[in-house]
Image (cartoon, rainbow, N blue to C red):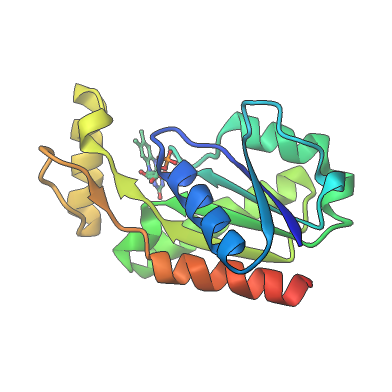
Length: 176
Ligand SMILES: Cc1cc2nc3c(=O)[nH]c(=O)nc-3n(C[C@H](O)[C@H](O)[C@H](O)COP(=O)(O)O)c2cc1C
């Protein structure tokens, strides 16, 4: 199958997830094309299936990914499609955080009118080395509350790569 992966990222983790997904697909014998949502991604109609991802910042996904989805919603709803949401809330394992992540995702889909066949939450990363002073303080405070890492001298990755791989293979398996 020919699969398009469109992503938006702020600190780079969603790009890393998208690249990993493409590798998984290529190894499984598919052809994967990755595109940054800010960089004029191709039309969905040139592909057999589309996967789209963004990351959550203060309860919202990037405008670029929303724009791409809204601009192509009719085509996306005709194709097998999947949405992957990268955030920190799901890494906490706390019920109220999981619910919040789910609410953010479902409100976003409702807003765009897109009905992907599959959705998943991917635990992201705390990129302390990239944050400015204030963001570092904010993220350390949130991490403390959620039981995440508070050592701001380095980055901390929470992505479960096996779970990402299973999601991708299940999606293409059921879309073939
Ligand atoms: C300023 C800021 C705000 C964030 N807000 C949220 C949030 O509201 N909910 C959440 O679950 N994660 C939040 N995160 C965590 C990011 O979703 C996480 O770091 C993710 O890996 C970022 O992905 P990216 O590198 O692709 O942008 C926030 C991170 C930053 C830096």
